[in-house]
Length: 100
Image (cartoon, rainbow, N blue to C red; front, side, top):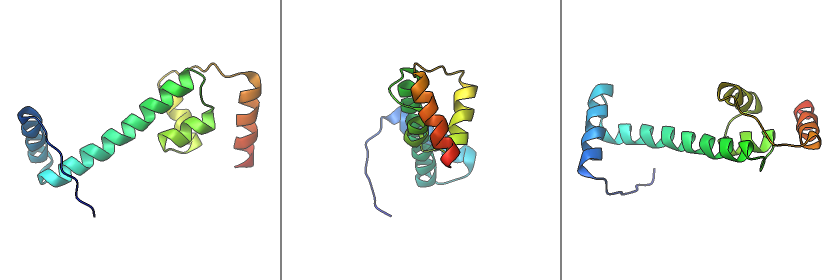
């Protein structure tokens, strides 16, 4: 596993140590979990923004978010997303979903 170094402010270091203690884990494990969860949420946030603005289709939003189409549809439902997609965009998404 490659190693990456990062400088963090004292207050964030303390927060990491507090969470590590709560999880009864070492700092490295806690940082890896936080990074993984943070990256997942960032991917979803970008997908939501691009989908909401109509820049991407349902399938593309799922790919950006790194989730299955079914998972993306659940995310969209939970966040009450609406899209600016055209009917032809929606039809293309439906065709792609049928091909799955």
